[in-house]
Amino acid sequence: MKTTPRVLIVEDEPSIAELLTLNLKHNGFAPVWAGDGMAAQRELEVTLPDVILLDWMLPGQSGISLARKWRADPRTKDIPVILLTAKSDETDKIAGLDAGADDYITKPFSIKEMLARLRAVLRRRSPEISTQILTIGELHLDGATHRVTFQDSLLKLGPTEFKLLQHLMSYPERVHSRGQLLDKVWGDHVYIEERTVDVHIKRLREALGAGGAHVETVRGTGYRITAQTAAVVAK
Ligand code: CA
Image (cartoon, rainbow, N blue to C red; front, top):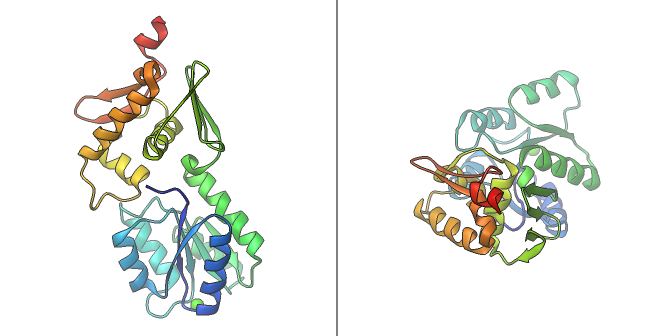
């Protein structure tokens, strides 16, 4: 269960990595540092981050080839990548974006700029991490205050149920498989059984009371949140 966005820093210069780590921690992120592509790959096999800060010039595989590799891998393809580089040449920028990077930061960069770009990329790629208010029928979820209400009464949800609901409400009517939910809500599903999703869906429905009717089981496929619910409309 992720409470703060995880940032994988792939950077071979310890001083820059340390500067990034310190500032990310101070600003509500959970940074993890890998010194090269191999270390980054090992880290990705254990836990998927919410965003990758990737240095261009690395020992061994370059940032560009790593970005290309992660984009081609179904498990990592949706993780936003921001390239860090001393190269300011326009053609290099295009090569980076072509390789699948979401954004670019040219060294030396200000911490303020780095944080702003990080947040922008997270907002674009992972709306569930953002602080928006989501609404389905009379069910409201406030991402900033973590409040959930149904028909104006405040509901009590556990952290996993909150994240699950936030993800479902970010994509109304869309059907999510258990594997997809594990990926997006738990961050990684290597060590978690798909049955875990069913347990938390059950808890979520219970916590939502009558609003739980919005959470629909799609037989043989998974779950979705829908505004078209007979039980709720009839009320
Ligand atoms: Ca470097």
